[in-house]
Image 1: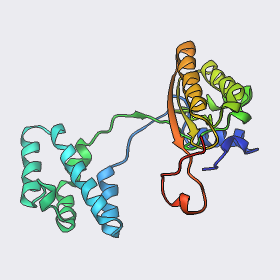
Image 2: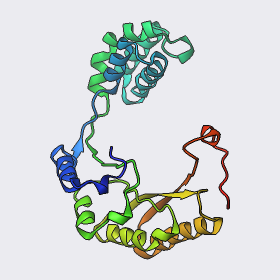
Image 3: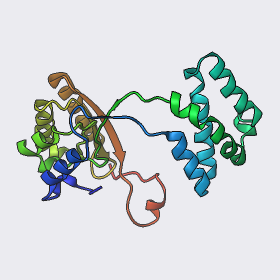
Length: 230
């Protein structure tokens, strides 16, 4: 959760820890029972409306997976507790019906292994990227790799970082592009064009993610209407 994970002197150790936790290339997992988790949250009284909606969606998402007698019995139970429409759904009925469908839900819910992925939610800092760093990142199933391209002065370091990513097999990137700060519209356009050209040249996919600058302090920090000087 570090705001600039590549700046950490322990980055190599961080990647090794991620791998030790089971997030290595090709690693899979079986998703836990989401309905049970949702019911537990409903019992705790945390965000009742949100978890009621989630429980309703999960219970109904199972119906297409059921067949014949099992499907009819499951549907009848939901009908008996007025759980066929969210408008008639109550927290009490969800909690009452769960013990009756718990075994069926666990038996028929999706259990196919799914690939694990790693995502550093902040943009990685291209100024810290080295061959060693990118090779290390490629040891985990990162998807997507996010690289910040905040101003055109970073072009050399940014392009070098993207090329290293492609070299080590990282094909999916979602890159933050700050705008509305001190840049001009032509600056923003050039950075978007660089991404298009890199995609074509390196056969990779870059999702350009423009991030609008908003002041941190003062009245203009209270809304999203700030317009930069250019």
